[in-house]
Length: 205
Image (cartoon, rainbow, N blue to C red; front, top):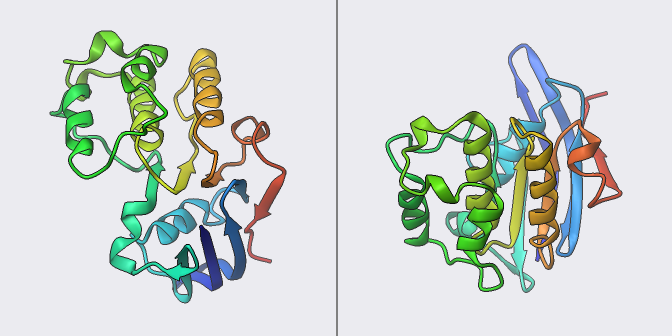
C-alpha cells in the first residue's frame, strides 16, 4: 500500500497553510505530522481523507501497485479526530452495529475484549450524549482501529484521555499498525514517540 502527496498545497484568501508537499507513505510505517498551531495539520488529514480539496496538487492511493479510484478511498481508511462527531442519539452498541454494516471487524481483535480494556463495557446501552469527552474519544479510537483499514489517520488521538486512557491508546495502536500506513497529526511527542521516528513538519516557510 502506498499513499503519495504530489505538490500538495492549501491556501485561503488571507492565509497559506502548506505549500508543495511531496511525500511517499508506505505500509508498515508510522508517520508523525507536526507543525505549529494553524499550520494545517488537521486540514492535511482532511485532504488525505478526501473530505476537503487541496488548492493545488494531488493525493494518490496505490493498492498492489494499482491506483485506487477516489470514490473507493473511504473503504481503506480508519480515522479519528476531534472534529469528527459521534451520533449522540446512538448507544455504543448502535455505533458498532452501524459501522459493521459497511466495515469488517478486524479478525485479529476481539471487539468485546477491547471495549472492556477501554473501560466502556458497562456503557454498551448508554447513549453517546451521556458519555464524557474521554469516553467519546475512546469510542472514536475503537471505531478507527477496531475495523479493517489499510490507512489510519489519527488527529490528536489522545485528546481528552487521562493517563490510563493514553496507555490504553498506545497499547491499542501497537496492536493495530502492522501492515498499515499510519499518520498521526500532533505536536505532542507522547502521541507518536513510541511508534515512529519519521516526523514530517508541514509549517509553511
